[in-house]
Length: 75
Image 1 (cartoon, rainbow, N blue to C red):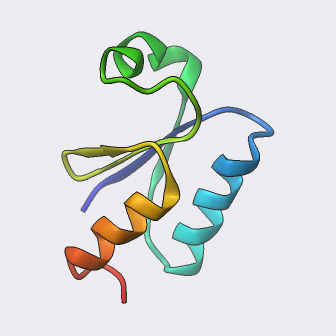
Image 2 (image 1 turned 180 degrees about the vertical axis):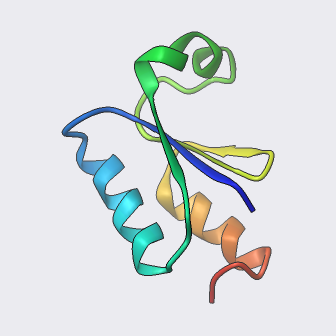
């Protein structure tokens, strides 16, 4: 499942999301949120990070973790 983190430099929640994915040995790509802000705002997101897993978007880490558990990606 492709995972993308739209984040900002020196963003504590962004670092936490990357740490979690690294700890679970999940690959992800990083994109600067500023370059995609227009499309992310249209989706209802206004703060970093925004994480796309598969075809779903998440604005917080607990929602992402719940989704990954339900999909059997992590335990």
